[in-house]
Length: 329
Ligand SMILES: C[S@@+](CC[C@H](N)C(=O)[O-])C[C@H]1O[C@@H](n2cnc3c(N)ncnc32)[C@H](O)[C@@H]1O
Image (cartoon, rainbow, N blue to C red; front, side, top):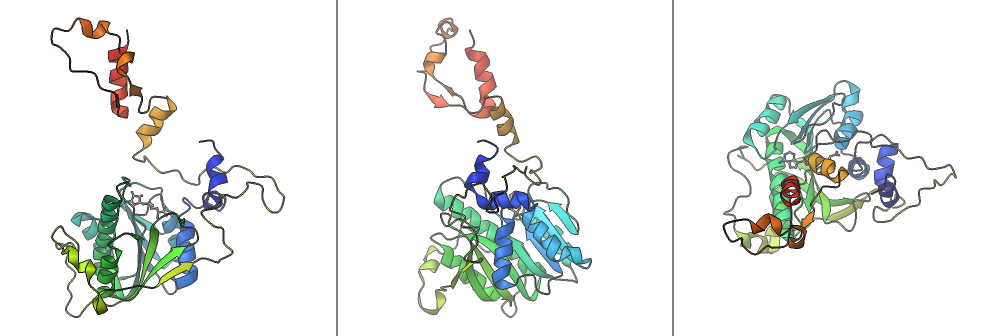
């Protein structure tokens, strides 16, 4: 993909770079705030699954920049520092990470917990939705330890088959639960955001990290309930209707007639998991397909053992180098 082709395709990607945001996701949080005034009176916040850090940038500017503000950002991946943001590198589904986050808020709870967590999508929808739900529940579990009564929790959800189960669980802890879709979130994606306001755990509830909220033994029929136990939450679109449509392509020429200039990304991710794949791709060595006819017969003729019939298959990047050596005449 050329340097500007992503800019042509996605107006929010381009605007993010032009406005100095690390990712287009910044607009999602800003548009959610337009609708729900999430930052009003907030001085302490947690950003779960924060890398590369555009939500933390928004939080840092809206609350951290005021001096008294305090933001804790957590991600599996490292991210570049931001003013007023304390970073923890860890897995939010792990007890040790949860404990580390909670310890920063002991005695002084948070007003807002946000989670834009997304697992590496496999394309198997049920698996992806399940992983997403687990991330959300890990985030909720942490929120139950750090949120002040009346506090707010915002988390990415996939509006899949079992989303009602998630709404039901959220409604146990919050007086208001809504499903919001910012304009910058593509309509073609099942992504949305659960906006949960008024943290109000049930009487006698004791936050407990040792009991995950969703485990393998949950009753699948739970989601089939109807009547008052089946929660139907309002769906709200947010962001000005005149805002850019994230599913449309816009021309690069600017409306004021000035010439488009390419802007590099504000802060590329620090050692992303796909770094090795990028290096291999640059060298033209990513996922090469080896066909049996590419291997000269002479290399197998001399073997004492009969070989199994050669099969056509795609190699993993890590295997490419070995196979190039094995097949060279
Ligand atoms: C869509 S990105 C977040 C973008 C971020 N909100 C921003 O504005 O820059 C999703 C992030 O979730 C993180 N993530 C996924 N699973 C995680 C886990 N178990 N613990 C912590 N972070 C996780 C990924 O590393 C990734 O950085």
